Image (cartoon, rainbow, N blue to C red; front, side, top):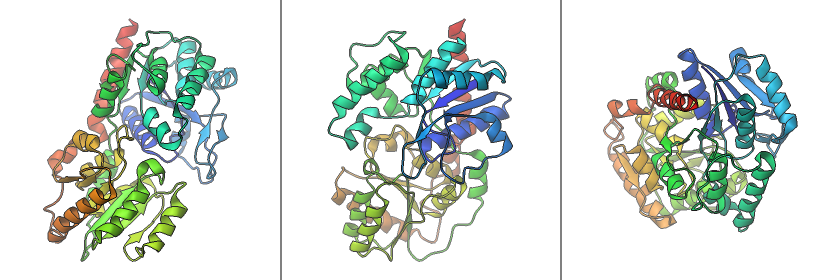
Length: 406
């Protein structure tokens, strides 16, 4: 089977969706399938991949849209259609298009599937409603703009659209209308999509964690230390609530080492706030690191801290932590319920004070267990989070989509 994945951002750029796509591709290739990934060309320096990776990628014409040139946009239209069609003409026929984007990637993928005459599996990764409302007070205008852009690129939806869908959910319903199967990376987001009329049925296809890297990372000895170590990973942006985390560290007065892995628009403010609150002796910023190093940091930590609330459609880092045996301090109850491991700590509400109180509780428990492995996720539980356990679910979805074509 030859699967064409079309997504909003290049698979080698930073982000949980990108990690999930890379792992899915490798797992499917190991089972004898071919995977081609079409996405905006990456503009930043240091973009190096193996020959096998280059064979799998179609870098679409694009423009950088962030100052660090990490992310880009490819315009859905005839020029991109022709570029993609020429690249695919040199490859075996495509059996199925897997859209793993919610913006230009979705529009480009749907246009490609129409041209190829193949079914679409659409995985909704982005909580467009929450994400847009978090960054602009003009969210309704933005939603109308998205619907207008979709209509310009695709015309009328070629499928039923529920009248119950509104705003951002209406936009998602319109791009999902042509999919044979709609999926989501978590049960809580699948439930939201159904509740808001995006699709009648949404299957759950959670992203997994790299089996090989997990096995290698688990073999590492955790560093010896005299106080607990917490780790945070992500994009430093408002919806990730990294500034609230810094405030909670100060309010909690915990005796712990905290490492923030990542970068983003809020990095200068994060650095300044750490200095202003006198936290430099406890809080460090290693910055963005390669995937294997990120997993090693999670493995070495006593707990991961997950700080966003109501924004993540899966939230991959707690899954990675669970696969490595590291417990998580959750701010989002939906992610905590989806991951469902022991031990874990759940913050009572969105307030800084509640997060500070949970940090104190968790660090106290971790300090008592500092010399042992008593507060770790069991190996038996960890096994259900690796990619090999997830790939069979995706192959079943593909088979059902192809069956619907007849």
